[in-house]
Image 1 (tube, helix red, strand yellow):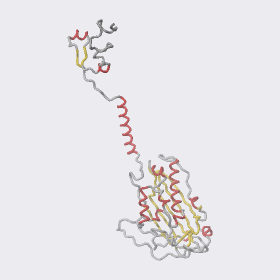
Image 2 (cartoon, helix red, strand yellow; image 1 turned 30 degrees about the vertical axis):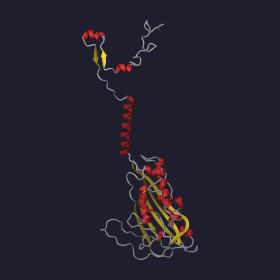
Image 3 (cartoon, one colour; image 1 turned 30 degrees about the horizontal axis):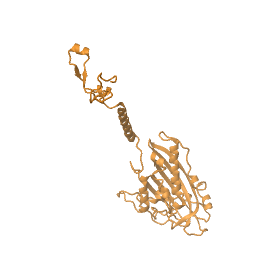
Image 4 (spheres, helix red, strand yellow; image 1 turned 90 degrees about the vertical axis):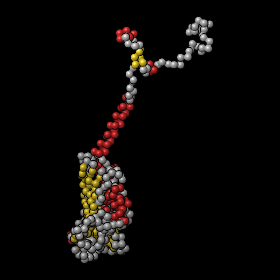
Length: 356
């Protein structure tokens, strides 16, 4: 019996069974039909226009999908924004971008008018000196009430002040640093752009206003003087302000007073006071604040009693109890020479010394 789909006589010999024919595998789906280059006119069109039975379709233009277009637009906007922000708000990354300004330093030795006063009792010296009301150590480096600026928050201003305080404490109050020991604790607070200048100042010190260790920190000649009392007296101020939309500045002005005696002297040896006033100018960008580092741009130091005739580039060589300043002073300054800084020397006022 032939199936419902077969001819009355059955399927032709050699033809595949199941009603399939040789064109069954060709599928004319909607996509195939839409893609055809020829299209048959309708009967009405053929009658009206006497047109051929078929017409040629214009080629289809395959454009980008909407998702691809949106993605391209987003990438272009993001790229343009990144370029704009990089130009409008540049930030310094470590080792890249604009280098930090080199530190400019000035050191003024203060020579005593007569003999340096001294006594075995360091407390008595302090009590009879202008440092009588100074605080001890880091307590003397006080932070002002923080105030946000136009472009920096309270937290960022506090970070700048704390970093400046840390630098002052480590560079002027650490006994290890003061006696010519390690300096890494100071170095790590500087931005990477200034660390080379810092290193050169210690490997090749020079009185050029750029490479003197005493411009970075306080340290005494370890062959001449040692601390008789580690309770260093300190007083001063810290002030923060905004230099521009990307920079904070902190100005520090502190006076530190040290009780010193000759190296290897007996505990009963006379002690004298040594005074250092430092005015430091720090600069911070947002990267510095993030890394808890600073750019030290200006260091102005006055220290005494010192002899103007001695070089204070590498170490402070204090005059101790009973000493007098050597005659002479800094070498003459050539106004025609380029580079370097003028040689300066001052006189230590009598009222700046303890009355004992």
